[in-house]
Amino acid sequence: MRVTTAREVFEDLAAEHLERPGAGRRMMFGRDCLTVGGRNVAFFHDDRLALQLPPETADALLTAGDADVPYMGKKPMRSWVAVGLPDGPAGVERWRALVAEAVGAAEKP
Image (cartoon, rainbow, N blue to C red; front, side):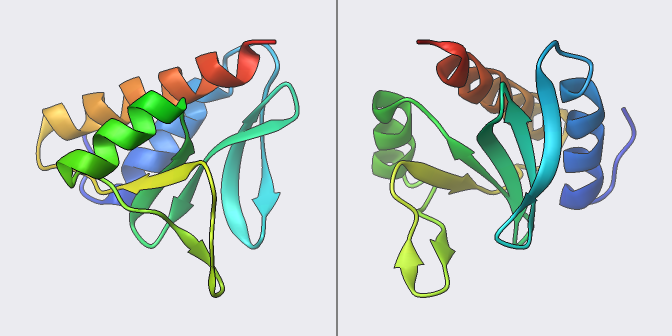
């Protein structure tokens, strides 16, 4: 995967995501969002990847300073975190793993 921008990484991950059963893509509050089973799991926001993750993962990312809470207008999005793209291939793999975790959490009953 040869990419240069966070948007290109998101587009590549979105293409991979859409190969999963039950996966989709739609607009949510004007943001490009990935879905699974009709549930929103991730979206592209200000050159960052915003995800709805399990609370323990989200808390760990926030505590480590690796993520922050995205806002829609003036309101924080509860249970969502936004993660920047680290440099290099490790950053792409990190985003890929986070999308997979968000999808897995959304698929649980």
